[in-house]
Image 1 (cartoon, helix red, strand yellow):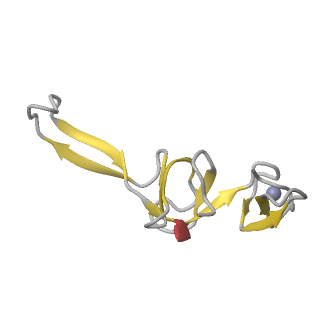
Image 2 (cartoon, rainbow, N blue to C red):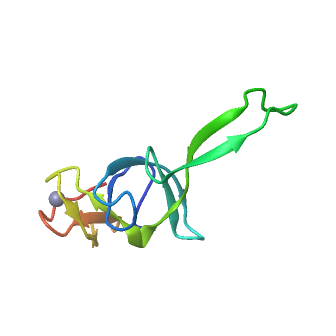
Amino acid sequence: MKIRKNDTVVVIAGKDKGKKGKVRFTYPKKEEVLVEGINLIKKHARATGQVRQAGIIEREETLHVSDIMLVCSKCNRPTRIGFNFLGDGKKVRVCSNCHEVID
Ligand SMILES: [Zn+2]
């Protein structure tokens, strides 16, 4: 996966298009991510044994990685991610705008 936990991403499709957030979890098998404050859905919760508070709760739903873009921490612009190899053979992510190493 090109997107990792704690990356800042911008949504490029769907109802939250244009919003930015921080990646909280990644689900590489599904190619989905959970982004803080993005794609919120409201759920009605009933007071049960485990959940004492009834009412409407908001929680984030996952987004597919094709619906988001990484915001480069160096140039602060949404970017496509490329890969590069360092001298020691380590694979790193690079920004396609400013060509800086993101990792
Ligand atoms: Zn950049």
